[in-house]
Image (cartoon, rainbow, N blue to C red):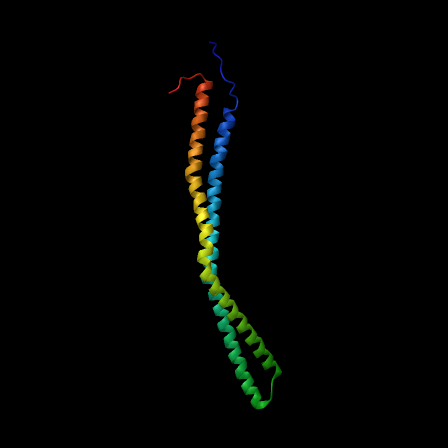
Length: 158
């Protein structure tokens, strides 16, 4: 039998692919972590920050409404004030609008947990895949590249 070596000229390409796979895995894990963080931030905003902002604005407009009612009572003793009536109508509209928004946020908060659970679990599955399966793949690529290097250099298998 004649000794002939296989024409293996792309071990470097295999090593490059191995490194690119590691980089891809790390970058994807970082991206998934940022995505998970953004998802958590958005949930926190809808659950806590938005309701607090709306309640604060609602209280502000309730005070304005009460003030405009007082002004109307005082002006009705003297003469009717169209500015005070306009201000009262504006305050009533704003209070009703904020009450509607608060109710919508309350409904969203109730649905949010079930809506967010699905993407959250998908992110965790992807992270698990990246950590476990891609790690196995990169180790296998390295092992194959090392074996091919040994073969091309004529080393005996270990």
